[in-house]
Length: 494
Image 1 (cartoon, helix red, strand yellow):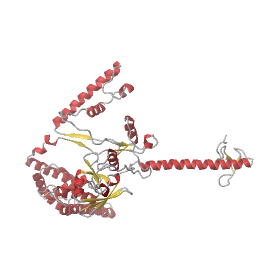
Image 2: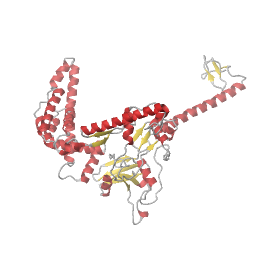
Image 3: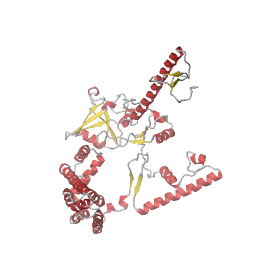
Image 4: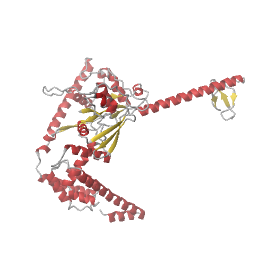
């Protein structure tokens, strides 16, 4: 497929269509060139994450700077850097074809995706072969040819130990979904996964049979801690039973003691949502919105609720008092609510894990009165990596507590602003409360007007249902029993 063929195909319909298709073709080539230019810029300004001179702290700064420049999360910046240097090292010919605009962005992304699990030598072989493939072909033809290249590369490259199915055992937590659900994936050798699925399936079938027998005999139903099955008489599905069995499974650590978590998992529910007067979402650990109904259900299962005080208009958390060098448990919990992730812009590490609470203005151990206080205004939560960079002087935060904002200066003079996290439901609750107040005020003013009108009518010798001029003096209106105006056509007020 070439530009001239696209133009002629469009011209057969109309000249204007041919021009538009040509513009689309040119736009696609320009997209390829822009993407290649970004790769070149990153290759020239950042270190290779897999190179021999890799420096941990320099890599962390590269990730931070790229996340700020591209306005993406730190984890995404790290992935972009790994991908960039992999392209520059293993796919130089492919990058050149992208740079010339010959290789469409979608085809290039397919190349990256399908070579991501190959060994370096195999990728180099694919790159060399791909440099000889004609690109004036259809996407289907390219996909077929590229598939042959991949298969040939795999067959010529021995599979290393770390790439075997056994070495790829892992459990992956997918990003949370807007409906309040999540997904935990188990990846490993197929025989092991099939065995786990079969054992889980057998257990679910046996438990369901026992629950059915218990309902029939009127005995205690197994696997029904909340009594829902006994009360409803409805058996859960096998899928639901598999989920319950996995959720209740004990983790065998062979005697190794697992400490209690540093923080509880927090679900924050706005007061009006709790009362059922609002559908404002709850928040899971300050990062994931939960549907109002789910938030109410979770709160209803708990015996203890913790009150969190926030400003009713701005949603900012009201401060905890300064006491000592180490933050108190209440202060740490406050900071987790204010900053559910590391306070450095672009870093998405949750503060529930491996968090270090840091003084923005350093605490003076010899003269505490002369240093920064241990107050929530002077504290923030940092992941270990960014706490280290701040200690080394690579990061410098400046806190503006009045606005709830921290400005970050890096050693490369790139500034970024990080605002405190707030209860995302607060603006919605304020809007709903304002609307309710306006409705109440409108009704109150209407009652005042009606009472005044009724008094004036009675003074004139009128009674409810008598004719009275309308709002603009028109005829046919009647006086309501409460002094309101009844328009023509409405039934008498009584």
